[in-house]
Amino acid sequence: MGMTAVRHTPPGGLDWSKHALFLDFDGTLAPLADHPDDVRLPARIVPVLHAALAATGGAVAVLSGRALADLDPHLPPRITVRAGSHGAEMTGIDTQPGDLSGPARPLAALAAAHDLLIETKPGVVALHYRSRPDLGPLVRRTVDEAVIPGLRALHGNMVSEIARAGIDKGTALAALMARPPFAGRLPVMVGDDVTDEDGFRRAQAMGGAGLHIGAGPTVALWRLPSIHAAHDWLARTLTGTPARTEGAAP
Image (cartoon, one colour):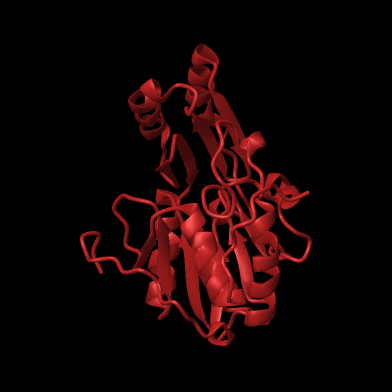
């Protein structure tokens, strides 16, 4: 299905005993913040995640652009299946992220010149420009020019990254779908950014669905307008009540 297809609101009810749930973190489970360190998981979503584990027989995974070492402290301990660095890291799977020190140099120079945040993660180098959105074209051009064979550029919400080619949230989803308790289920991938599109494509190729949060073009079959709407949908389909209580998880 192409990027111009009509998107639908997800169904009000879903038989989660037949599905697996895959979730992005920043902008999906947790609202975005000016700095990645300031992102907090809302307390209202924690019981929903626990309900998802029960409803799916444990087939719940978080697929994030964050490194696993950065992602893990943000999640409830019971959410044990996690993929970080856009699939370059996965719990229980040994990965070889590769050396990105060469391509990272022009990104580091740009970050130093304009006081931007640069993150070096396994298999990924990310340059954040939320503090300087006017630098977006320069950041994207610098990242594009730094890509060498075997790597690819990723341009997301106020962040541009260099990552290994052939590794993404779609490949992570597929790898998990080959393992219990995910195997034999229909995948539902929920995300908000360009880097989630690979997950949407793979989920839908396997008979499941993607749920895109927010505006903008997407391949996802389903769309909801905001993170709050997505949390409410998850809560209603998993627990029968909306997730409305505000606050951050301890």
